[in-house]
Every structure is written in structure tokens, then in C-alpha cells.
Image (cartoon, rainbow, N blue to C red):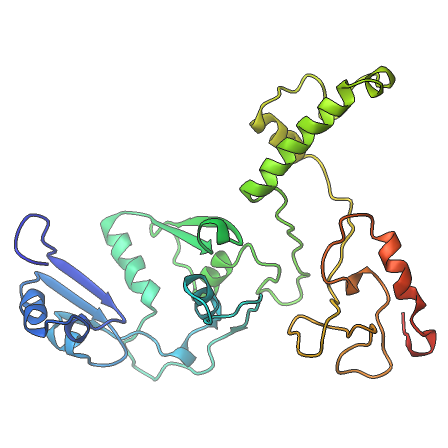
Length: 299
């Protein structure tokens, strides 16, 4: 914002207060005064808002639908913050706007700006950074030339990869995200190549007539192998939905004796109690679960 090439001429402040946040307030004041346009979006008349050409009053928390996306996402930017385990909550707006109020959602301001500029809005949702990413980024585009969405519609778009829909009565979406990470794709490619080498080695090679899937005609290239793997399916050895653990384990549903935490007289005796996926078939490790006293079990 200092004079010279590339000097900022217009500044839109969304919920911040640079007049008080920047260390040298005299220079901050001079820089903000030199702007051709200063717009502040805030619920209070801050020091920056006092200097602004326009002040946009956004809706307050209870006046708009909300999710827990923001407090959840804090976990990606440091330790001991945010929610370390999957968690989500949504609530509709709880109070009506006061009669005659002149307020708007923050996104409505940028929607109108893009509409007047004749440009689209690209939105990217990220679920972590680098190797810590829990899922690939999800991108969608908003076209202000089309119908204006509602806040609920934008929440639905931003959560379209989630398992639970905002639409009441719809069943959960089951999206295992097979081959969604580079690690999964790399392991799949290496696995197919290893299986081919084993099948081509004696004495097994003399017993094999042909490779039926993905097929000998498929090139030995990463992209071709991944494309073929997308036609495969899981063997469905699901575990962990009623994970066992200590009473202070936030992810535990049953204790080590398979008793439901917080509910007397109920035990769970199937693969769902396994905290992690075993490396082999689930049949053998689930058999001991069936030895729990049947007098306390409801299956």
C-alpha cells in the first residue's frame, strides 16, 4: 500500500481491522487514507470502518444458517486447536431479520461484485494441507450470471463430499474415496505389477491360460492401471463402526469386554468392534467376539 508500482488502490476488509492490527498506526492511517476505495464488512463500527467509503453490515450469527466447518478446519493449521476427530453440525437461521434492516450475507457482497464485473467465482474446499490432507481438494464454480443461490444451497455445495445431506429424510451417502490419494494409487500400481510378475514366474506361469482382468492388452503404465482399478470393487470387510476402547477414548462405543458404553445389558459381537482393519480376513479375529456371555447380548 506504499506509493510506487503495484500500489493497492482499493481494499475490501471482511471482518478485519487493519487500522488497529498493523503495528505502525500512523503509517496505517496514511495508507488507508490514500486508497481510492475502502470497503469494510463488519458487525461493529471499527476504527477501519470509520475511515471507509462504504460499510457493509453482515447478518449476525443467529440470523443465518451456520455449520461447524470453520472451527473444524482450524485443526489443519496447528496443534491443540479445532476438532481432531470427524465432527459436524448444522443449524438453520434461528431469528428473523429486523423489519427494514439493510444487511446482507458476506457472500452476497462478493456475488454482486462478480456479477457487475462479469466474472465467475471459483471456490476450492481443502481438507488439510500436503501429506496431511484427509481428502483431495474439491472445487466448484459459481456463475453470477445465473440464478442467485441461497446460503443453504452454498452450504450444500461446499459439503457435497460429505456423507449426510442437508435434505431431511435422505439416506447417508457412502463414499469410501477409493484411490483418492496418491498413496493409494501408488500402492495399487505396484500391486498390479507384482501380481503380473508372480503370474509370469514358474511354476505358476504354466498353470495360467490368460490374464482376464485387467487384461494382458492393458499397457503397463500408471494411468492405464489406475483406470482399470476404478472398475474394481471392495471385498467389504468393514470394521470399526462400534470401535472398542477405554471409557475415556472419545471414539470408543464398547469397552474391551464388548459392553456398550452408557447402556446396560447390551454387547456388540461382530466386526464393528475392531478399532482398526486387520491385515487378514476378518473371520478369524471376529470369532472370539462370539464367546461373550450370551446372557448379556442382544444381536
